Image (tube, one colour):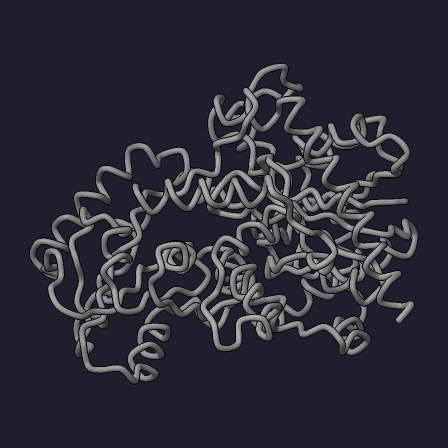
Length: 467
């Protein structure tokens, strides 16, 4: 069994340790950036380490860049490019096609030479990762995508970039322990609704594997200058301005918060707790991979608001909108102006707890956010425009749900039956989070569940082919 690990972002710092926990499994590394390549090539546990930008510039400059696009009509190139947040969208359409074709040529070579059975993605939020996902399917390589349950520290793996439940879900029967956990969770949540805690694992962040040292800012700047003028000349994810913005974030956040306070007080003029009947739509963080990847057509949230207003058939009551806490002061003023000019649209103050609005709403709307999950748990009507494991569960159980209400406990049991308790997120946010992420217990559970997923996926396909 051979599994290729796609080393997105800084995940290489974590995934380089997988080989020590997966004896008997051949692991290869596909590195989409210089940092991950430097980390992985030092590890002896990898059968092979590949760097996407090897000979990339000559590929970009030579040949007919439409060859790859025309050769793979089964891949919707526009869908792949839609995953990009802002980095490549500012380039010409011709440049984007040339870039995606060069990436595709490199990935083709790697898949043909490595011949992995599976390819694992800790996250899909770049066009390189999305193209690798689509191309892997075209080559008969099974993708594995990390998914978090959102309502707890339960995590599972899916074969879909939309983070749907795995294909073998119906083969995993829930047990009495799952049911008891579901009932207790729902009882506590309904008695005291609050934001979900995905860090509530049942093991301490001790006995950690090495998670590396934080690099020197000046050396990182010099290295990026060298990369931008050399081997990663076309990698737009390397941005000095973005690095500076991140470095100055602690200073900028209070300033942006003050700017939003001024806008809110004198321009938006939000209301307090709404009275009477209302619908609720909490704005999403933007641009963000949870929308860009599974539902890129809803990146423009003005379009979502219009869709909600046009499709409602149960009255002309207000649509209450609340800003995402991470977006205070980050949106253009024109965004709010367009929203408050729409009839029946009303803002509420940012201090109001979202869960209180969800509990009192007639209908809760979201694209792929947790608001619909919260509404489902609280027995409130909801509508989700994107696709994820919540909407997928309803599709899978459509026949069972005819003429009856959805069983929330069964939903939680089904998620638990394909999940394990571990965390998987980008390293380097804080020492406390890194200690939990890099603990031997956590890495061991990730690898155990990877092997479980591969075994169950193989079983499902064998049963399907035998029908």
